[in-house]
Amino acid sequence: MRLHVRAPASTANVGPGFDCAAVALDLWNELEVSEGESRADQGHLGVRAFSLLAAPGEWSFEFTDRIPRERGLGSSASVIALGLVAACAVTGRTPNAEELLALGVELEGHPDNLAAALEGGVCLTWAGRIERVAERPPAVPVALVPAGSVSTADARAALPERVLHSDASYTAARAAVLGVALATGSAELFAESLDDRLHEPHRASNAPLLGQVRADLPGGALGATISGSGPTVIVWTRDDAVDACAAELTGRFPDVDVLSLPSSPKGAHAL
Image (cartoon, rainbow, N blue to C red; front, side, top):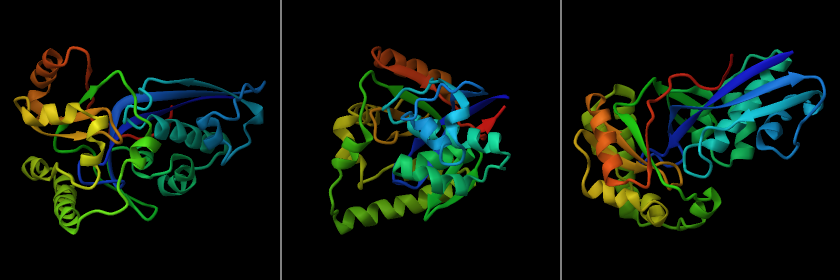
């Protein structure tokens, strides 16, 4: 028996949706699982995820990593989703995204990227729930991916234990607008929602491109957000301006990888 599984990248938080909003992206990690002589690194994150549902000892695992690691694009969530969905396939289970989220979040530590990697599309998650509110967001993500990396643990350690009531109120209002914008596809509301005072100000040093882009948004861009913990920055662009926006950003930031990453309506799946 041999099977092939794919799982997408994702961008989480989307401004004020800290730890609860994420969008699956059209960039994929892959896993090939073969029955027979085991070649399983028991410490590999994907194998650990697989072992939550199936014994890995009878299988060999070949991972193809295309999502940059520690750049804020959900690479670890993708690998966990690969392991979970592969285990479902070899055991004959029908994958259930919320059940897999409950298992995988113990490995991932936070649910937003994993929810989108499993379910695809635009997802909101809370208390173990996943609500897929749309296939695509109201704008196309164009990613600015620097060469440096950021540890999620380090980025979380930079967050304060307490925040001002005014900052919480400011962000809560924009998170509410974000939810409406994502569910209705309103580009105007989406543009109004892309600001945050809970996590982005404290992660700005990990994503210095954010301030530079926001100070001078490219033509056709609705706004910019830190992708996950950074350092990647997502520039949210109107459909008809993606190529021009990417070209402008490439010219302005020649040392940064500029990737047009359309959202993916499909999550992790066996081929």
